[in-house]
Length: 433
Ligand SMILES: [Zn+2]
Image 1 (tube, rainbow, N blue to C red):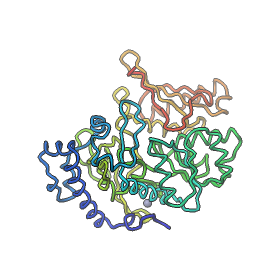
Image 2: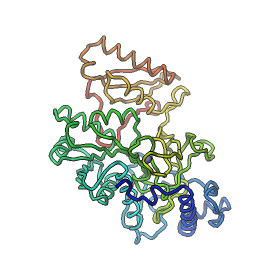
Image 3: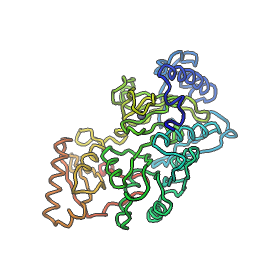
């Protein structure tokens, strides 16, 4: 079994375009009739559903932003009566109101199929044993994995996140072959196992299904090395029903988008102009098969590039690069734009330190100061103050050389940085406090 849904995963581009156009027309008509928010916005711009005649006409439609979801909280964008809704998820919402995601029975079925495609592309089969260490609950990750792995016929262990020692016990005793969680939690598990003297690399574990936070290729390699697995990425947003929007195939060089469900565009984050394929910009999706909450040109804030390439895996679905960062996460330090992922990539290249760090931004007078606390490896730390100072200088020089900013590196003792069971907090901006 190479593909879960061969028809769509290997559909020739012309057939896919026809399918997308047909469903885009239906969706635009659907939201225009059912959701006053969209009707008002389309009317303001003088656009009627019948004006959408080609896929290129998509760019005439107005964008939808995260603020629109907040303004219409909780169900203002829902296109069906709540009697037809069978599930409601919500984002973890660190600030303000959460983002709500209602599903009809058909939406749930589509999500399950998208997740089955995802896990199948990661290499998961009915013979696998999946430890699902994503948080179960309002967060879409846990149930998304649960449904997809169950659909494939794998044995799912719904352990949820946390209790790391118990996770390691189950990994060993149940002969788990697939681990599903955030990348930072995978690293936490790897580290705890090393302390417990459990050799995860020697266990049957072979695949990791990771997502829900941005991570660099260097971090992926580190996790693959420490756990002895292939680390695969699944990407998605609560606004589009959760994980399963795009996913790694065995090539691991870009994520295939389920474009029969989600039409992607990349736009200039400032002007909103659509950018040609191969250009880096903000990712925008339109969901063309969802009933309860279809989304029209939703601005994800994620920065990536779209590529229409022939993939060795045989899938014809368009690919997006691993997300480079969120436009919201971009740090402006003394006028220089920096993504935390750039700093992570550099740190992971240095053998004397652990992949655990916190970026701290401070202000001294009018000047921005970039500080990074990073954990020393035990051998480094035991090398004494001179060794520590030497490594600090080395890291500072490397960051200055590549990003062009002065930085103060502080090596902290092993385990000094708080470990995450879910999404890690890597940036503290004290300039805003
Ligand atoms: Zn592929």
